[in-house]
Length: 445
Ligand SMILES: Cc1cc2nc3c(=O)[nH]c(=O)nc-3n(C[C@H](O)[C@H](O)[C@H](O)COP(=O)(O)OP(=O)(O)OC[C@H]3O[C@@H](n4cnc5c(N)ncnc54)[C@H](O)[C@@H]3O)c2cc1C
Image (cartoon, rainbow, N blue to C red; front, side, top):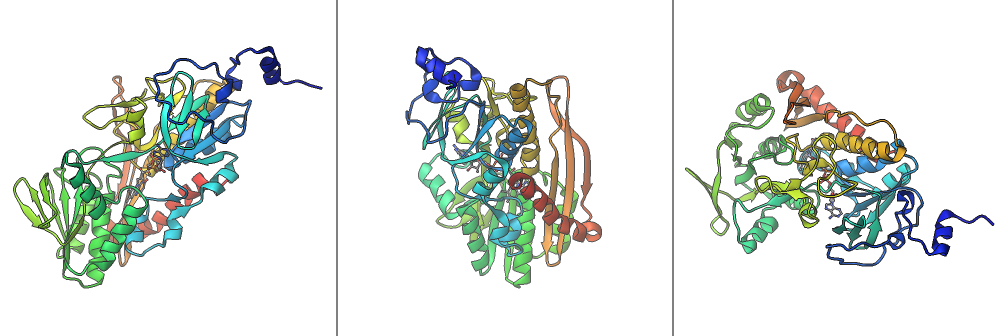
């Protein structure tokens, strides 16, 4: 009878050293770790002799890492750890808010993605990391890894507005931002649907927030919705920035020409105080009464990165502390971080995160396959934004990135199509072509 190397070593009582056998937590010779071992039981996952790649976060980047790691390195045993039980897309959700698509269009199946692409979807929340022993701790048990990828996205940072946690919770519950999928979006949709008239406040945060054009797109489609319903209503868009941060010409002409009576755009509107009881927002120079609102605060890297000591507190953003060319964590071996929690000033977009996910997958595959080093490739931001819903019209931007000798990144090869009167209908159709292609890329075989 043949005996495996694992069995031989186990019988001899030797600790396993090979990286190809290291994916079983019990098989590791445990080193001292400063990690707070919350679970200390093994996740219910199969044993493997193959290199195990664990991906935290089944969003646009994590799904791409999981699928493409398996394609580029078929010997890898890939586990996708995601806390949610279904995927809901943020891209195209602004059109769902105003009934242009149904929820099924945005919702996708993690089990199907895993079946199609030969990896395991493990529903759990990552809660801690034992870097020394290469063990991820989750709400559903510990998982040993050879390579670990964090793709956990963003969290909100309300600290510029308040340090009172009770007040923050009122903002989160009563006026959610709607920039992370799920209940926030449902609350917002119901607010829009039930709005009877008056001021509806939206905000644009400062800094590199998630999806630069989305707050302007949202303002346009809600204004159009109120216009179609002939409501005596106005969207007030309070922008903490001095001007529209992206596709400025296209959005500005839409605001002026389509929604003069339905949308008021206020640049440099840094919020000084929000009075929820009297429903008034104070900026430095003005005050705005409101009937309803969705307050979008600043964003930061997802909290799990801070929890496991892989975030860098650059200007309070707590984004990933990584080698910005390879996405490898500075403070942990064999760990990568990708997607919206990156510190580079790329647009925090699904398209960018998807391309980055493939790039990170190629780095991990290179290590597993021991192949030639991977050259840096630019992420790509390719983004359509609706400016009206009746008729459907949209504007578009495409950009690549370049970096200088100090590894400072800038936009490169940017193309935009912002003349919505001329190209708006074609761009609007392309929203769905783009989304179909990306959903297929993440979920289909
Ligand atoms: C309204 C709106 C419109 C947008 N429109 C566009 C668009 O048109 N085009 C475009 O390209 N982009 C668009 N975006 C941006 C896009 O949604 C994000 O950039 C993209 O989702 C980022 O991908 P990600 O993988 O980094 O993060 P996410 O997609 O947020 O995925 C992160 C995942 O990690 C999971 N997670 C977090 N912490 C843990 C943990 N501890 N354990 C387990 N799981 C965890 C989360 O549940 C989540 O599923 C839009 C965003 C919004 C809000």
